[in-house]
Structures are given as structure tokens and as C-alpha cells.
Image 1: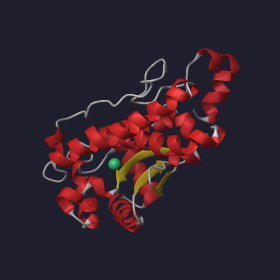
Image 2: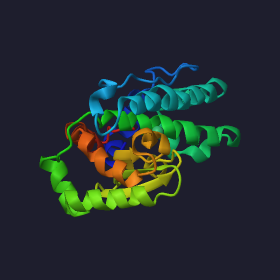
Image 3: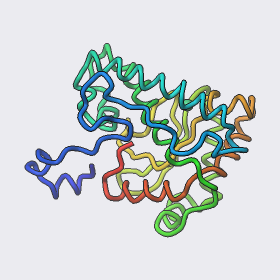
Amino acid sequence: MTTTRRAVLGAAGLATMAAPRALGQAASGAAPGAFTLLPLPYAPEANEPHIDAETMLLHHDKHHAAYVAALNGAAKDNPALGNRPLHETLARLGELPEAVRATVRNNGGGHANHAMFWQLMGGRGGQPSGALLAAVIRDLGGMEAMRTAFNRMGLSQFGSGWVFVTVEPSGKLGLAARANQDTPLMDGSQVLLGNDVWEHAYYLKYRNRRADYLAAWWNVVNWDAVAARYDRARAGTLTI
Ligand code: MN3
């Protein structure tokens, strides 16, 4: 929630208005099962030929499912986890008991990152319009400059990680790379979009050619979905 909304709502408003739940999180967080693996929002072959169906199925049904299972395991022992929106937990990892912090960082980050990732794929690439395109031009030098810098950061991320376009607290767009399942949500930014550069995201089709995967991935971005995320980010209602 933005400072502006906090100020507008005031203490009474905050008390009566539940923070927005994250995508893939139960409305009332009764652990276990507080966190849910939502189905892919399109057929696994929807991103062919750029991202193959087998990769999509393994990635969603096995890798993402494992993060959700481990996160629910942590919530079983720490019920407060399931009752707090995931993005708020990720923004305040330092408040968690040390025994559970790394598990939540890795698997909560993994759940948030993948839930975001599926939502913004299944499209036909191209480019956004309107306010989002204007922001890309204003803050990132335009679509081609953004893609070039994003792909370079994804390629130079050593080992497993992610590359993101963020919405900073100031409202400006930015670029960020993170190791493992870390996310800019852990640093107070919002995530507009992100690409997974773990080998499991591309190795079946692209083998070691991460650069080819990064270049091809833009062909499946659903810019309508990204624009909807941008609107929510500006309204202070984007969760993960
Ligand atoms: Mn992954």
C-alpha cells in the first residue's frame, strides 16, 4: 500500500480494510494450505514455439508446486504466515523467526515470482500503449533500450535468478536482477514484470543458450496483463 493510501485511509480505515491478498493465497489464511498453486491461465502449449509445453508443465506443476508445498509447510508451523499477505511477509523478512526465514525467503519468493510470471505470459509480444508505453519511454529509454538492458542483466545474472522491471516507490520504472528466488518486493519495490533465468525455465529447448531464451521470451509477453499490473501498481493495489 502506498504512503498516500495509508494517509487517506488512516488508522480506522486500515483496521477495517484487509490488505489485498496475494494471487495464490487463500482469502482467510488457515494453514496448512494457506497458499495455493493456481492453474496456468492458458494451455501449456500457448507459448509455443518460444516456450515449449513440456517446459511449462514441468515448471508449473513440479517446480512452482514445490515452492508452494514448502511454503505451506512453513505456514503449518507458523500460522501467522498464512494470515499475512505474502507481499507484506516478503517486504519484512527480517521480522520472521530465524528458523523459518530462509525457507520463506526461498519458497515465498518462489511462489510470488512464479505466480507473477504465469500471469504475464500467454500473449503475442509486441509492445504496450498508453500510460505504460509512456513510462517505458520516460524511465527506460523506450522498448528497445528496455529489452536490451533487461536481456543483458538476465544474461549476466550468475547462476539462478530473475530479472525484473520494477515500479519504484517514486513511481518510476526500473530494472533489477536478483539471485535465487529473491524479488524486489523484498526491497520495497513493486514488480511490473519479470523473467525467470533458472535453467529449469529454458534448458529443455534452449540448452545453455540463455541469451536466445531471453530474446524469444518477449514474443509471449501479454502486454494487456502487464498494463493491468501497471494500473494496479499506480493505484497501490498490486500485490505480487
Ligand atoms: Mn522457475
